[in-house]
View (tube, rainbow, N blue to C red):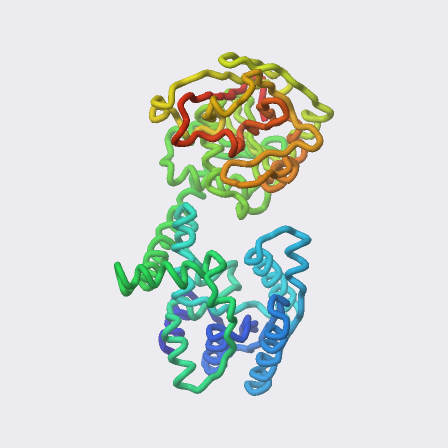
Length: 471
């Protein structure tokens, strides 16, 4: 196994002579194996090692015992230890992040502090081939693009390295057993509660038994192939982006000709580069946002705008597409509006330069309709008690059941979760029946009014912008 680790380190240039490397050690088999392996290799590569252990306070006494165990291991190996205790459950309540996301965020912030403390330049993490397989499956099931399917990177940001990424969990456990190395077991990893755990404990064993006993290595190899292809496409798209973009008055301007002449595989990457230029990162930009931009280009009128995470605004011009930051503050100030919408019928919202139309169709027509346009929605007409619909902006106390959910959510919280900037929330039209929200235009319909197998009549709601502007 040591030879495989050395090959991985050399292949991806993970380590250079003189590196000061922090090893993230939880006490589990993967991180303990990584620590022992790097300890054996530190003279070969001429590196200095430090251990970073974070007590997340998830498991009370067990967490404290993990910390004591890691401390003992470091003393035996004579490796300096940096340790912190952070109340992650309290942090989850404060931020409303999921346990996985919150723990990851806190952990990586801890690693950055540890790097500063010891003047380190690398962090070694114990992700292995099984983790890679689980990650690829998770992202595949969630509908990720090639960036997601490329899986866990062997080297990220030039300083996070994963020497065990091509070593299986079986090899790790066998190495520990042969060398009589003890480790801690996190019992929560054995419970099919979290999404990743269910994939590890249920889906992968099923795929191994019924389809391919080597599914883990196949998925890991697939991720590597996709990562190499994606790396090449990103380089090409960067070149295309630079040739077709320029800066004007703090706005990034991209010629719309680029979108006519460039393959879609490069367009999606160029848009990510554009957003990164404005906000400093495209991390929060999901594929749904990318295709919202493409829909803006293809189907929206001149002057239409789209707001993305981190305050990035995209605006469609006559010949160009404009990207800029925080561009709508003055437009939505103190706006209030309410209009009647006949069924069938239409209404023009002068405050937002939007036209809303309603029409009735039979359920049989559903197959002919466009389900991918965020500005068009299909409602079960017979579920609406009063067809005297209204279109208005938000009011204090508004709430609805977003499609796919089972209970009410405050509209304010929905806007926060969707990362809709405060500056435009008053400009987003709501189609309502009485006090009941049917559609948050451009974002989500209510679960109460969705089309199902019992639907007979469809209410088709369509929104479009005039050339004067839009959200």
